[in-house]
Length: 393
Image (cartoon, rainbow, N blue to C red):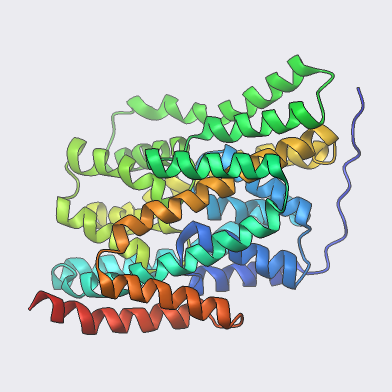
């Protein structure tokens, strides 16, 4: 069997520079997973050339195949590229920590000052602006990765349609897309073994299911529940919302309907990975301990899957079959991301003012390439605080 040598170029940056970048991204990176993965490509691949295009695509493919929050998992993978376990650990912590501290502070304010009446107004404006931000990010990802390849465009458009129609992301379609391109462009000589490897990779997170029957304290219950959430929810951070609703509101009765809606709003108005709202939820359930355990449990599965699977992606990443496989998965992933923009837009664009905010956001980001997204988010929040009360009177 022909194998490829593992080649890792010498990094042109230090680990601390990378950690600082992710600390800043976690602090100022608004727009959810679609925007965040777009920022990583723009900054680390296109602008600074710290990460190669191949490494980025491999990371995006693995992040879509494996469970857990997309943006956090890609960040962990990019940290692993040159600095292995220590890099993955530091980038993961740096990326998640700022937004975790923010949602804990919001959780404290929520409990002490009674609800978030102003949050609806802020979310009204920010939610619309976020649609514009992620739409631009999805467009850039599409142009960079799908290019003019007809087969990849067919896969991309199929996943856009499936995501819009079903309003969910189907992990098996990512895998099927990769296999299709692989078989058409670089038919494998050792099909059985390759299939087993792919199957084994998708089964890694299943071990967390063994924790489901633990009978212990509230904190242990929180840990078990959020570990399952992190292990079985694929794709963008917003994909975890339906899963959480059933367990938090209906099954365990840890949150009321209003508290859950407010938690989703918190996810949208804070920077960093959307799924960090689990910290806010954990705080409402059991204070700082609940917030910490909920966050750690949610991110642990994606961290373990990444550091276990990444070496195999690196080792076989240059084999023609793997390159074709990654191209197929990447096209499918970006199609699903683009479809999710449409799904989210249907919920956030609710009237003429929100539609105008979204359109203006797209126009500004298209025209002014160096315009920072936090500036737009802040302006949208102010607009929301002004417009929303007027609409309610």
